[in-house]
Length: 204
Image (cartoon, rainbow, N blue to C red; front, side, top):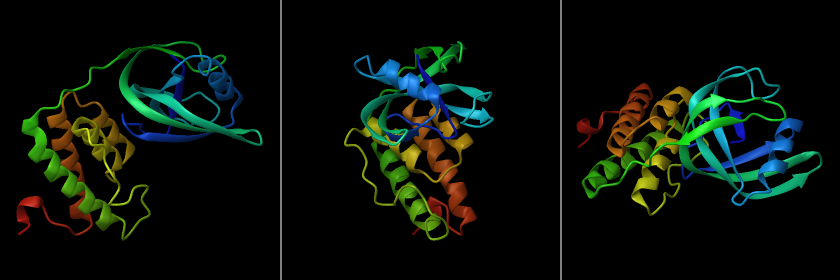
């Protein structure tokens, strides 16, 4: 699979806007756009930079599916959507663009018993986004919409939570949705305390 290492984590069911200008990734786009659907893998760069190569990459990521693109001067503007998680089995040659042998990771199933946990975690995440947003500019507002599919909403909550890349990577590695929600709640509670909040059990 064609791969696009980035300095950020892509979650399933989340949009990915990209500005592509490096020749190797323009070549990648030319190759994958011959297929339907046009897909590439996204993994977090562990060390190094996005531009120029020579980076160290993590072994888990997300497949991005191209939904729209446009050109501006010598740049291609791409809008893609995270669709499923993958694990990198081995890296191939970066010439003409990064490629890897990957395997799909199973989608954790949703069960109705998780509904209260999803509701609690959503309320917590939105509250923390609102609180942190008073001090810093965030990508996602507290009232951003979530998917009607509860399994998709679990991944989206992890994505919109105001967390660093390594915490997001930890969430992406979740093997079940219960762990994903509980860990998301734990991490944003830690953030909430930093900004003067209270633990959920302390709320009236």
